[in-house]
Amino acid sequence: MNTSEMPSDGELVRRARKGEELAFGMLVRRYQRPAYAVALGVTGRHEDAEDAAQESFLVALDRLDECRSPERFGGWLMTIVRNRSKNLVRRESLRETDELPLGARSRVPTPDRVTEAAELRGLLREALQGLPEVQRQVVLLHDLEGWKHREIAERLDLPCGTVRSHLHFARKALRAALRAVPGMPDLMRVAQ
View 1 (cartoon, rainbow, N blue to C red):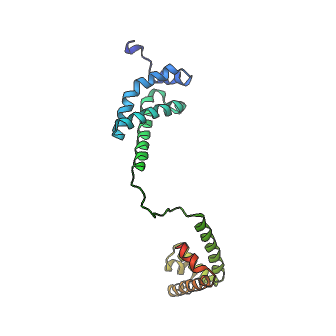
View 2: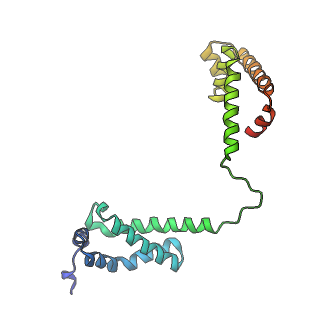
View 3: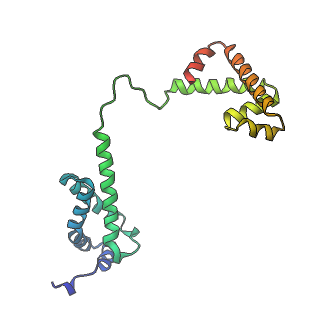
């Protein structure tokens, strides 16, 4: 077959979409070496490049209907190859990391810690309700919302020194209320 008789990428994609296996096989043969070259450029390893290229062809076959411009199949496929290769490199780097030292802690809280944190939130909510309204507003705006003393003073129409004073006494009252709860010192340590 001479080059004038070779079907275009667009024609092969359209035929493959209709279920013609031979058409997709021709696309694979046409792009096998370029796909491998791109994958090798990303992964740096022969075996990984072969895996990434092969996986890319399977993805391309599965998503062939998503190729918006069949005439540009090659570019679309190479994007898949690059992404699959990068994913493979990421997966491999995760596998090759050092083992966790004994006694290392997970950042995911255990069910016990989740329960204790929920209890602490409930107790804190109750303690907040025991504060005078202005102190409750000041402590929530400052500690929860991150507002500065000046911003709170402007918002509540209070002098800055008064805001500081309210914050000090609100925190002191919250600590006292929480310490009075049986078992609270343990919960407060857990929540930190």
